[in-house]
Image 1 (cartoon, rainbow, N blue to C red):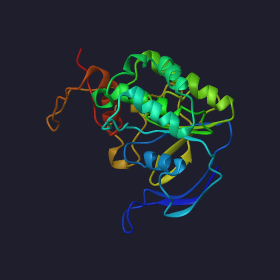
Image 2: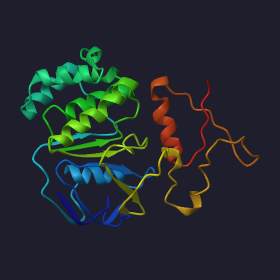
Image 3: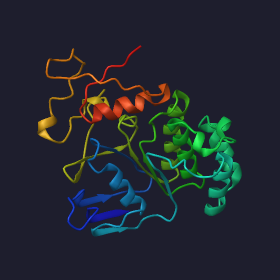
Length: 262
C-alpha cells in the first residue's frame, strides 16, 4: 500500500493538515505513529483507512479487508454490546462466535449484555477493538487503542497485533503512550508540521519526553513537575479512575505539567 504526494485539508481555504506525504506499507509490517495532539495523526489514519479522500495525491493498493478502531468509539447507538457486535458480524460476513472469543481475550465478556450508552471510556475502547477484529484484517488501524485499558487488556493487545502481522496483515497504531516503542521490527513515524517522517524512539522514552513540534512549546515538558511559579495557575481536574491514565497522557502530550493525587 502506498501514499503518493498525499496532502489533506478539511476545507478549500483551510490550513494543510498533511502535505506531500510519501509512505509505503508492506505485508506483515507494524507501524507506530507518534506526534503531539493536533499534529494530524488521526487524519493520517483516516486517510489510510479510506474514510477521507486526499485533497491531492493518491492512496493505492489498499487491502480489501480493513479493520479500524477510532480513538472515540460512538456509544450513542440503540444496541446492547452483544447486539451491536452480532450486527457488525453480519455486515462483515464474520462469525458471531469470533465476537465472543475476542470479548474473552480483551476482558470484555461481562460487557456483552450492557447497553452501549452505559459503557465507560475504557470499556467502549474494548468494543471498538473487537469490532475492528471481527474478520481477520489485511490492514488494521488503531487510533489510541491503549487509552483507558486495564492491565490485562493492555498486555493482550500487542499479542493480537503480532498475530495479525505474522499472518501478513499490516498494522498501524497511533499511540500517545508509546506502548509499541520496543515492539520487535516496528516502524515509527513522527507526524509534525504537516509532514510524516521516520522516527527512532530513544530507549526508555515516555510520551511526556516527546517534545511538541513548535519551538515555543519546547520547554513545557520538564522531566519532573516542579512547584508552580507565581505566573502559573493550578487547575484541578477530577476524572474517573479508569480514565486517569488517558487524560494525563493527553495533557502531557499537549505540553501541560501534571501531578497525580494519591
